[in-house]
Structures are given as C-alpha cells and as structure tokens.
Amino acid sequence: LQRLSVGRGGPRDLAALRDGLDSGETLARSLRAEPEALLPPPAPLAEIVMCCSDHGAIVAALAEALADEPPLLVRDGGFVRQGYRAELDEQRTLRDDSRKTVAGLEAKYRTAAGVPSLKIRHNNMIGYHIEVTATHADKLDLAALGFTRRQSMSNATRFSTAELADLETRIGRAADQALALELAVFEELVAKVMAVSASIAAAGRALASLDVSSALAELAASGNHVRPTLTDEPAFAIEGGRHPVVEAALARQNGAGFVPNDCYLGTERRLWLLTGPNMAGKSTFLRQNALIAVMAQAGAFVPAKSATIGVVDRLFSRVGAADDLARGRSTFMVEMVETAAILNQATARSLVILDEIGRGTATFDGLSIAWATLEHLHDVNKCRALFATHYHELGALKERLDALAPYTMRVKEWQNEVVFLHEVAPGAADRSYGIHVAQLAGLPAAVVSRAEEVLAVLEKGEQSSAVTRVADDLPLFAAAPARPASGTAKPKESEVEKALAEINPDELSPREALDALYALRSRLPAD
Image 1: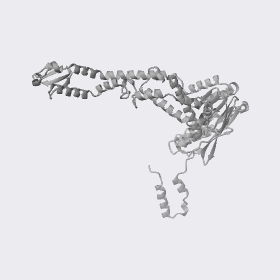
Image 2: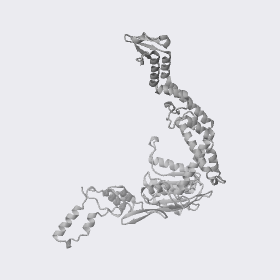
Image 3: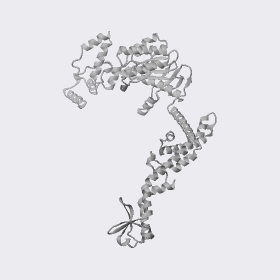
Image 4: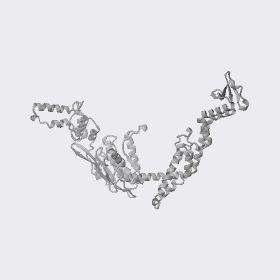
C-alpha cells in the first residue's frame, strides 16, 4: 500500500492486496464462527474481525482485472486478465496474432479478386502489399476491389489498399497501444485502492496484531514459556530462565536439554559479578536474561518457570568483539566506546550486561578498567547489571560494594577432563581453564604442554621474574618428541597402550611374545 501510494508499486503489489484482503475476509469468517471468542473482554478480536471485513468490492475489482500471476514491473505488461477490456484484447490479438490476421485478409482478397495465387507479402521498403502475377494483374477491376498500384515488375504487380495500410499501422502500434492500455488499467486500479486506503491500512494493522499475538502464543505453548509479572519496583527475579534460541538449536541438533538458571537482581544484590571458565556459558546466561527482559516488555511470555521484572527503561549490552576499521576504531576502541556509552547513559531503571570488559589490552590495564567500571556501575549508575569477567581479582570488591554479588559457572574435573555443567552458583572461580579450551580447539599437543609449563611458572611467585625465567628456559628442541602433557592437557591413552599395559612379559613364551608384538603392530594407525 505504501509503495502504491508513492508511485513505486507494481502489479504484484496489487495482487498482494487482493490475496491479503481475501485471506482477511476468510479469517474474519473463521473468527465469527467462534462467537464466544468475540465477547467482551477480548475486544481486540472483535476489532480485528471488523477491520478485516467488508473488503469484497475491492477484492472483486482486483480479482477481475489482474492475472493470477502478474509480472513484477508495470512496464513488462501482461498483468491485465484476458477478457477484462475488449480494446486491450484487440491490441493483444494484433500484436500476438498478426500472421493469422494477415492470412485472413489474404483469403478475403483472393475470393474477391478470383485469383487463387494472390498473396500478401511484406518487405522493409514498401511494407505490407498485395502481389499477383502479371497475367492476372491486367484482369483485375482495381476500382471495385479498392486496389492501388504500388509497383510493377516483369513477372508480378504489387498493390495496396486502405484496409491493408490501416492494418499495417495498427500492427506496428499494437504493442505500444497494448502496454499503454494496461498502464491505464493499472492507474485505475491504484486509484480504486487509494480510495479505500484507510480501511486497507486498518486491515493490515489488525492482521499484523493477530499474527504477532498468535505467533507468540504458539511459541509460548510449544516452548513452555510463562507469563511474566511486570512491576515498577527495581526487581529482576527469574526462576529457571532459558535462552530461547540456544534451547531451540540444541533441540534440533541432538535433542539435549538446555540447563536453566535463576537470576535475582534486587536492591540488595543488583550487580552480579560472574566468573568462570571459557565455554562454561557466561555469555549465554547474560544474553538469555536480556532476551527475557525484551520479550517481557514486548508483551510475550518468557522462557522460564517464573519471572518478575521491574520495568526497564533501556537495555545496554556490551558483548562480543568487533572492530570498525573504516572509522579507525580497533576492537578495543569499539569496546571502550560502547562501555563509555553505557556508563554515561544507564540509569537506576536500566538493565546492563557486560562481558569481558578490558580484555583487549594489557592485563593490568584491562583489570584496572574493569575494576573502575564495576565501581562506577555500583556507585553512580546504580542499575541492575550482569558483569562477566575472567579477572578473578575483582572478587575482592564484594567486601566494599554492598550490592555486589559474586557468582560463578560450575565445572567438574573428572579423570583429567573438565566437564562444563552450565550452572550458575554463588561464589567465585579461581581458574579459567583456557588451556583446556585451547586443547579442545585443536592446538598441537606440544603447544598445549608448553602453555601448561609456562602457566605453572607464572602462578608461582612474582610475575615479572617468572616471565624472565620462562624466557631464559626456552625449549630449543620443542619440535622433537613433545613433552608429556600434564593436568588437563594429559593425552588420552591409546588402544595400543592399553593393550601393552595388559601384557606381562615374564609370563609369555617366545612364540606368544612374537604373536603379541604382531598383534600390537596391527593396531597401530596407518600413516
């Protein structure tokens, strides 16, 4: 409707109005069949029925005039239904069936002249003309037939008639005239649509409202969502919250269930400091709570067991890493610009999620920025906030910041492996398990092993001297057989090693030892 109103629309826009309004009429009839649904207090449904009804006249006009599948552009033509306008059909016939028209006129002249060999031909010099042999030309009654001599040759004579000249003109102009007539029909239809544009727009709004409401209702039913409670109090109490997108992705991939988590941001603990290892789910937790707030204030049910949310005036998010090189901004600069916007604009009614502030610069610089940002959120902005970080040192602020609550993502170490439980629990993490994640990502075993050695040195004593000791002890032959990994980086025992461990050499005869050796060799992976 908007494109048509500014002269940018096409035949398919008219067809879309035709089909959409017709569907609206069908929907209105379906709703009328459920009279109990239209009784007060559900007034919006009655309004939707009213807005979607009484469009039969414009639907009929568009259906009568438009082809079933019109082209995209007006200039392409062919969008007016055959039989809608006789004059247009005639021009199309001339354009598309010119040979048939010429053949009919030729048969007419043959009968009138009594010359079976008479033909109507065309060339670029004289256009359409009648041609007969010289023998028959002298016997023709030119005046009675209305023939005018055009050209005489040794073996044939060419003639023309007013009717043939008019046909030639009409054939030449037929395509242009057919398109012009279609354009006129299009303008007429647009004018009819614009005359009832207000009611069409109302139907569009009604359909959109029902579309959004029914889609959200279907999502709430299929996703086991609950109706949130909105309040003016500075509350944010989510029990069993879930990330709707991640939950749906997990269900599609392997059917695994999403691990729900609670989140309570109130006056006494409105600022959460969330620590924990990489890949444990910190970012997911931050985003799911932001999404729950957005969905609740948009009027949707939310993915949780229960939710009580104080109205949020603005939601601020600083998550992820991205640069803006076209404007001369590095990844860290973008991070700082976004953080600055949050600290300068967030109010006590805002909801803020911050993920890994300060990670794009030196360790002490980043820690200092994260430290000061956390204090500012607590003392100045006084907003509800989730602050995820790997700087475990920030946990010391809980002694000074009354509304700061430390939480962590739970993990379990089992058989030299780290299992992410994806659960949020009170407390603080003491490790980030970054080397374990690097191993999962596929870093070479030698790199993982060396990283563990460096980490062990750095975790002992004063940092600067530890770095010097590591640099002085560079492994010159690291490309040789890799150091055995330790801790979380310990490689898994191969099948050959397991089989070898089960063999007791003292109990084997020479023949059994040889058989065992061949058996072990056969289990080695092929090169």
